[in-house]
Length: 288
Ligand code: NAP
Image (tube, rainbow, N blue to C red):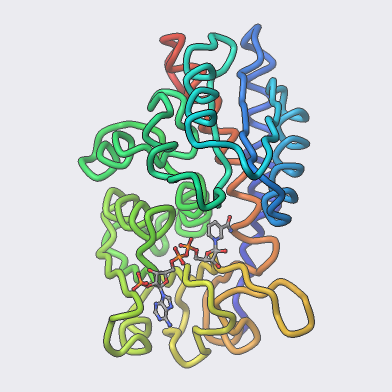
């Protein structure tokens, strides 16, 4: 048996199409501002892709590019201006930031109602306590893929054993909360966990977000499990590869995301979804 490939590109396209259709009915263009500091090349690719996708879906999107040596206080002033700008619905400060800037200070300075990355402590707290708020884009995108894959009742999410590899603030922790909210039984493993392979083998849903090429071997995967590969790594040949040894996983998994073309495209689509949600919430319009 060969696993079904979960097509994140197609799912992201559908999601963006739905957002565009909704925006066309609104009479305004939700405003997104991305702040990029310095010239990190990976951030440059992300920001360009985001600009293109946002414009195509009808957002008023712009990137503010600042020099790498900007002072933290100047960046905080810019964020304060964006917070009070009525044309701006969503603010994203692209990470990583240069060493003179404390990312937590910047994240905490963003108005939580415009925090489309979902990293502000208030939004993280809302997620952890089961209240509505803006949710980090990558784990939100994974939930879209899981709902598609586990929809229809054959293998419901409720009660499924989910294992998340990685416990970062931007992915592993919010992923844990979203899976719990979907009634999964969740285990989170990390660099200090014992018997990584054994934990993974018990998973109906295995989600890897570690940043180590090919860490998850084929025999770590239970027969028929859904495998979501969040990792983005450069292989020896320069190509992008995930955290899962894809060729080994194919004959064992029931469904699997490729890298690239799996989780990656969902992140930008969910950033746009968050921006629309923020725009509607700020105007007191119900989402849906
Ligand atoms: P991170 O902050 O570096 O966290 C990595 C996590 O993996 C940590 O919890 C770490 O454990 C754990 N870990 C590291 N080595 C391990 C090992 N050998 N065994 C078990 N656990 C180990 O990374 P991140 O920001 O969450 O990103 C993870 C990966 O996802 C990266 O490849 C990143 O590029 C990718 N990513 C992709 C997207 C997307 O849009 N597709 C978005 C975000 C991230 P400790 O906590 O114990 O250190």
